[in-house]
Amino acid sequence: MAELRVCINTWNVATQDPPTIEAFKDMIWIQTQNGPDLYIWGLQEVSSKPHEFIQSAFSDDPWTEAISNVVCPKGYVMINSVRLQGIVLLFYVRMLHLPFIHNVQTALTRTGLGGVWGNKGAVSVRFDCYGRSVCLIAVHLSPHQDGWEKRDKEFHTIIATQEFPQCNATTILDHDYVLWFGDLNYRIEDLSTEAIKFLAAPKKLHVLQEKDQLLNSMRHKKAFVGFQEGALSFMPTYKYDLRSNEYDTSPKQRAPAWTDRILWKVNRRASIDQKYLSIKQLSYHCHSDILWSDHRPVSAEFLAKVTTDDVQPLVSFVPIESWSKGEDAECIYSVLPDTKTSSWDWIGLFKVGFHTAQKHYVTYVYAVPNGESNSGMCKIKFGSGYLPEDTCTKYVLCYISRTMNCVLGVSNVFRILPSEASERQLQQETQQLANSQMETAVQAGF
Image 1 (cartoon, helix red, strand yellow):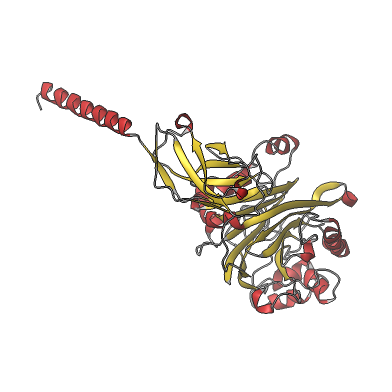
Image 2 (image 1 turned 60 degrees about the vertical axis):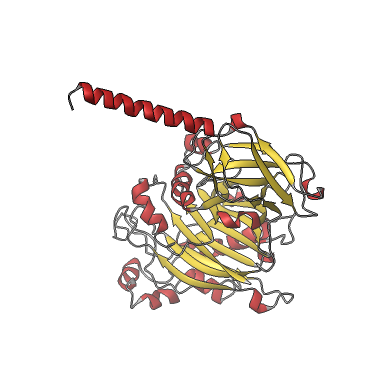
């Protein structure tokens, strides 16, 4: 048995563009010093103007790109991203876990305008990881103080409409671990805006919690039955003036509330011993110093038990010491029996720090057909003309399954070295340059 560290972040970005990368580095990584195994972001109100939304269909939106530019160089790879208008779910894992993330499927539910419009709703990613099924749901529910009952109904609509027919866990609640996060938009009931602002202080938060709509829906089993949430020990996360620590001073005077939440549920099935299925929350807090939006980002970290005993990747590569530029490069690997392979499976060469396995390869070759039935090792070659020129970068190989739509194996990290001929030529050029510089110095009288 082992435990995976899971970090979840949720933030309503209020249609703002992301800040600069330098400003964003501390903001995105502040809660992940211990290096989570799974790293997840749920964003709401990402700008979805028509021209921007069309553009995002062909390339990453600015927020996805900004987050990936910080996360992926730290050794993470994006497994999937799902978008429903302004709702975005980003799912990253440490590269070493790539071969153990299988059966990835996505779903979405529109709840805006009675289920027609996607300005409100949910997106989800489900997957199997080391013998456990996990479902991530990022949501943006209906707003306003009087929308309490509507939000409860939207929860049940999302649960009822999202299905994963090709998986053992066919619905959200069938999964071993369910992680639900986003702008749930629940408000504080029966108190005036002035009273809520007065009580929004560390020693008075317990009074507000008694009036929190979400906690009361859970207490009275109207929604989120069986879900858990950490203690609300932080200030209400909504609604602030932009770039300010002041709660809403506009004419609308929106009352502060904990709209941004992270909940979880463990499916207590009788067939699994309780000690082998559990999540422990390590932290739950908002980042009150990040003033970019009218919401404060919220993050939580968990330890989730998984089964890692005798687990091995479906595809294993023979370690590569290095490749040489200008020469054909050989790759040797084996496939476990009964693995579903296809003649369309391929092996990609990636620069370490790549964002996604499906898009950001340097080059690729098709895998050996029916590799799982091969009695020995499988061999493929990368032609010398297709190898990259950059010999300073670290590289890695990934086996991509077209049938399973995931990575089945990852090689060790290696370098592509200059060929012997290239090294000799480089040494000659370096010596010629040194001689030329010496002659120039002599002529100049030095």
